[in-house]
Image (spheres, rainbow, N blue to C red):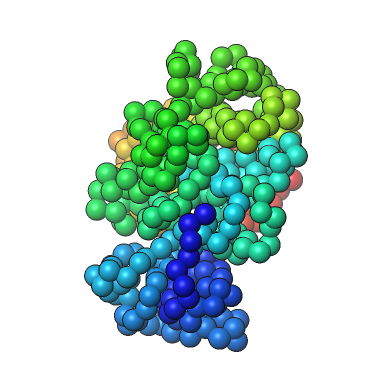
Length: 438
């Protein structure tokens, strides 16, 4: 745990969940806190705590430390001024890790972060090792300061944005599950996005666990380890598939038939979680029990129900083409696909090729619907452009035959029509239930 500087004046930029948690933590640590946001926000709780809230505001603020919320771009004027002045700028997870003695596990990747984070926390707790999921998955790490025992493992989902500005953040175990183009509206190129992900490993030591996707090397002192989905494990493998899930030092943990998560992509998530659980001291039986009892993650291949032999699946968290392709891999036959949303400047050619194998019709919504329709047309995937999600679910349900899957896998962000992917998933659930799903 790295030391905090003596209290002075701190600026918190961005007042979503992590920014609010950071502002309150700094206040509790004795800092004079100014909090700004580009939009008008309701922040009476912060004001009553003595925090100087300026929202909306884009004016630079003289200060000794800046804590940046992940949703705020570096070009936002108060941040840009701080960088130019040489003022220390930290991510919220950097601030929190400097105030907590807890061991940390960090999980990043373009896809699979939330599932792996929740799965790992569940496996650890089922095995008797206290753990809490936090970070990008829901509870900000800063909100846990003083709320959990010092030996509780913090299993932190880390977005690329959170992994910027982390000069000392040190996970004892870390994994980069995969990486494909995403957030190209925020990064100048794919390499910049890739480097942000690799920051997760920069402060690790030789006895830490670093699991990195194929073709990449960990950025710190920990040796690079792999999960291997097929083929021989190799000397750097910590987990692999060979008639079931194997973990280095433990052997066979469980046959795949005893692990309920569907899809080839989830096998890699499971392998990573199992290897990290073993690093925390769990044995094969404990890991197997946790894997078998994991209930899954809302909005991630969530089966809402069935109606007249038609299954409705909510994968609203598939906010980029690679995630949507993985969802299609879990349901390889007779899919009625609902896709589309707000743009992240990602192409849809690979998505269209994947859809051509199983999608009998696509129901496209939102800002990107025309672009996806053009890509699908090139692969001879029939599609319809519809005004909203409820209409798409109703039309898909009316067209479906017994055995079909109505799958929401948008391949896009949600902010053109929804407050976020959870809101979109809730609308899908309600529309599916109106169509008879139980």
